[in-house]
Image (cartoon, rainbow, N blue to C red; front, side, top):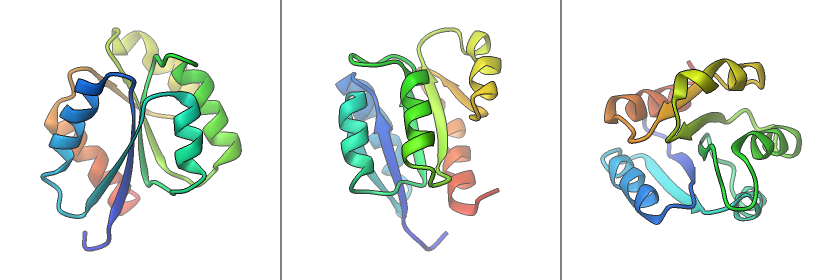
Length: 125
């Protein structure tokens, strides 16, 4: 894993952003960017091409579902997109899978789950 991995954290909660950034800081090859809304996310995506996007299910100006569809249409980069939710993840898993993302994480994030996403985004497997 020598090449740099760009990760975009999309979450309107500052503490959640900081916790995920701290967890990702243990990976020396990861660079993190943060967006707190759907609008900020689209602005970031005009400037960076992340290999991993951690997308909150609920944002102040949109839903995770609507933003996921915008990202897929406007920025079809092939990034690994994981939905992050404080709600019951199992209830949302099938719905988001039907929209093309098979990674759904429950808050608070488990370090092992985040490490697995970094591995998948780094290796493409």
